[in-house]
Image (cartoon, rainbow over all chains, first blue to last red; front, side, top):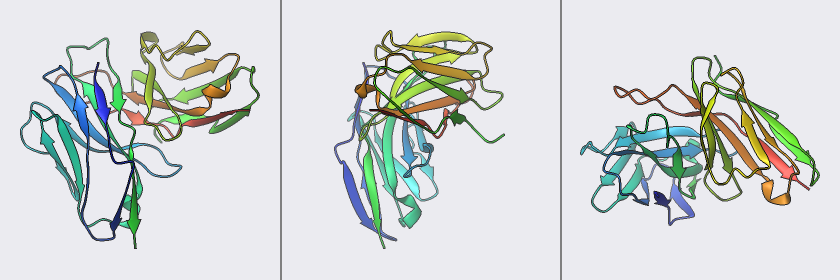
Length: 119
Length: 117
């Protein structure tokens, strides 16, 4: 079974600074997706960034980028130029790839890291 | 289309009562998922549907829990004889089915927060 571990329950960063959230995972599969989701207080979960395991290039989305180390099973999120609106719970997550087209379609989440932005 | 909606947003009930939650997915999405999120934890998968067929159920889904999607559109999640341990946020998500040529994102609803007294 796949597992996702986030070892930082809370982190703080000064506004406009850069912060890195850590995540490790365990799987025996060779192809899969990894994600970072953001859950603001009392608001719904949204996808921040997605990485396909078969792609060596690290994904980037504006101020958000990942450092994907497949052999080490490590997947960290870097937020540059932190903004007050970045304050939220961040979840690292895993999803299997097809050919499980009719089964095993679930996202496995870590416990989350609460990110505080200091003005 | 305004995304995935869930009703009610909050539910307070007494131990032993039955509760039912509803999820309306994004209209063209044929997959619908239920997750449970307890305080301080990440969401945990409960079950999912492709159209009206329930394709996978987690061991977390005890026999007190039942989910339906009768016409392949909205879904209901019922909890019978609620227990205090059932207190959690129940999240619904929807997506298009698997497509090998592109990734189909799961879009999440705002959740139903259940408190069992």
